[in-house]
Image (cartoon, rainbow, N blue to C red; front, top):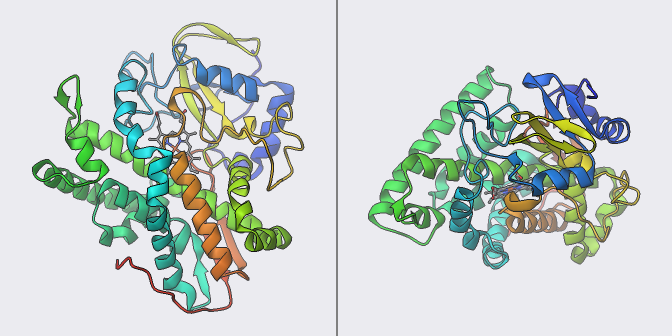
Length: 405
Ligand code: HEM
């Protein structure tokens, strides 16, 4: 067994993850660390794919008291999320409930709404010539969209956006994290109120669909509903916001490429794929071995935890030419940022269109933005993003949005 000093929660990893991943890929592509009770780190593209495609051997199931299962994060998260922390056959019943609401056609249908939300957010800062683009645009657009998708009243978007952002990057035990957790409870209270309303009177939204759904003839419990809804919220808001924030920060430092995307918006979709690869908003996730097996020549025992590193797979030179280069029109670009196998991201079509629309609008309306301060997350264990990204730009005029929030 190759033991390494590795912790995907550490600040060192947040600052230097591409180099640390490259070192692991070359020296010990399946390595063991003692951090967080011990886990294996799988860092080559082919090995990551092998692990996540074998969902019988590598379970995502949330914590079981006998320690045989420990969920999709290392260490196990405080709240179960569904369906990401379920295994087949139960998993398929829940995934099936959701797929129709997350299809490419649905993403297309939501595009005008996402554009309105983006217009609303840019309008609110355009006259001032300054913004924290994370707090004003990159987090709010996915937040407003997610609220609309679920069917939550949009007037609470500011708290919703700030809480989903803050909870991801703030350190447990700090005042900021305590405040975010308290606000999250308030938001979940509102979600419960809307659940009760939709039970009585269905509307055309995801919450109505879920409260009236049946699994094996039974309606979903309130607890199960919350497990699904929190996944849609935490899987969809700060991940997409971080993708947008990273893209904006990189484009500021690469003005020629920024001009290229501004003058040719058709090239933005391919660039979004490359931003997904290059920033890997979710660096990696966890599995638990259900039986003894071998990965990359290393023996993994039943019950051991495994960290599948999407961010490392995305830089594997076996698959990507010049992996350390940002190549905005890279094609093909088979990055693993949305995962692989049965749990592959349900929201990928939404994330792609949100990122594309926000980039189009920011480059069109704030083309000369200058980043004056950037504060990256101290840890990228959950999401790789910026706490804040201050910019200045030539002021403009609001154009008006149909969204009145
Ligand atoms: C850039 C943005 C995003 C990234 C990088 C991302 C990444 C991922 C990854 C890596 C997985 C696979 C998890 C695993 O294998 O254990 C996943 C699953 C999932 N994502 Fe995303 N995601 C993003 C956006 C979204 C959005 C916008 C939504 C919803 C609106 C969403 C909802 C989900 C759900 C529900 C699952 C669980 C699927 C399942 O277990 O079958 N994600 N995501």
